[in-house]
Every structure is written in C-alpha cells, then in structure tokens.
Image (cartoon, rainbow, N blue to C red; front, top):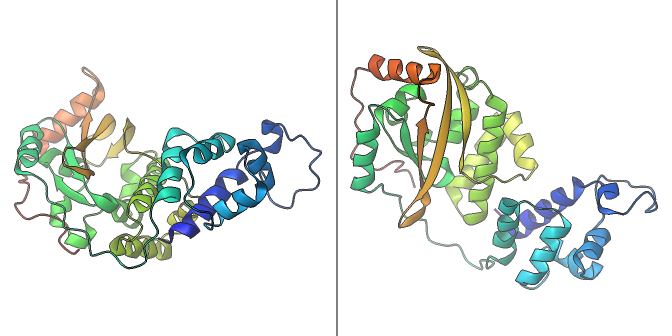
Length: 293
C-alpha cells in the first residue's frame, strides 16, 4: 500500500463525510461541487495554512507533528481508532527500498494448550496478520468452519467472509460483519503497508467481490475489540454470541478471540448442543499456519 496515496484518500474520505453546516460554515461558502468540506476549510478548523494542509493530504509535507495531527483529527472529527490510524500512516517512515518478508507467525505452545482447554465450552481462535486464522479450537471450528481442513492460503477470515457463500447464511448480520472485517484489514494495511500477501489479498477480493471493492474504497478503519454477533447455525439454529478479542504478549499482530453466551439463555443451550454434537475431536495442528509467506 502506497502510504502517500492512502494518506490522501483517507483524509479526503474523512472530510467528504462532514456536513459543512455541522462545523459552522453555513451556506455562504458557495456552490459545492463535491460533498463535505474543502481542504481550506479543514485547514481553517485545524489552525494550519491551506497550503500546508494541501501538502499534508497529498503526502508532500514533512513529517507532521503530533500537535498538527491532533488538530487535523479534531477538525475531521475522527474517532479514537481513526485518529490512531492517521498518526500511523502520516508518521510512518517512507520506504526507499523493499523490506524483507515478514517472518512467519507462530502461535506459542501455551496459547495452543489454552485453546484446547477451552474447546469443550468456549469457541476460541487466534488471528494473525491479514486476519489469517493461525489456530482454532474444536468448538470454534464447529461454529464457523474447520479452517485447519482448508488449504493454507484459504485460512483467512476475509476470504471466508466474502468468497464462501455459506457465510451469508451463517451470519444474521452479514453486511455488518463483512464491513467490520474490511475495516480491520484496512487498519492492518496501515501497520504493514509493504506486506505483499496483504496486497495480493486485497487485489483478489476487489476483483471477486463488489461489496469488498466498495467498502475498501470507503477507507473506514476498525479495531478488533469486543461486541456481539448473531448466527443462524445449520445444526443448532440461532445463537447470539458475545466476543472478546485480546492481543497476545510478544506479538502485537496476534489476537486471541473468545466467544461466550449469556448464562441460562437459549444461545447457551444451543452452544452446549453444538459442543455435544461435535463428537469428533479437533486438534490444533502442530504446524504453524499459514505457511505460504
């Protein structure tokens, strides 16, 4: 990902979503040929010169200070995740030569044992870069899909979400889930702009999925954290599941996600039924996945 292009398109998309009336410009600014704020209006709100803001948005400004980026974030009304992303792409050093390939991510044995110990009652799995599924326990495989049975290249949550037709039936709110996953991938792209496998993934999904192409172009970002998802499972029916995503020590690009249900709820009963139905043990493999990078 070209960081200059991404900075330009991200800032442009953020100012395009703002209504001039909401930030005090009224209707006296003349006829608007494009939605949202003009560059000079963002500059005015941020307290910087129009020329400097234009150069910043075009990726031609010198490394922006924290104070300037804070002011721009306030002017554009960025949320905390968007603000962090702005700092990330605006202050990251521009590469003059290609970095060596990132090392293969490896899930520690202790984390694998944790997944296995949770496998009877709590679906859990580990995400890596690009939302690759690095490890998954038995119950999570029964709820979602057995990623370990897929070719290494296909052990990816974005490919699963957009290219597997069954997923649209599994997620009651498929569009919300898919949009969120695109935002998470966009944030990952900001952290690893020179990842060739991420570039390949984005290109493949943009060609094969019009929804992905449209939502990727929106430049929305989202952090993995916590929330609720609704499932319509082909075996046990409807479930409402709360998820928690926690970064793992020693590798900030690995995230442990666990799924739980409310005690005494129909969803808890359904999850227990799924656990009993899945009578074939699912062992987290010794081989690290994916290995194709």
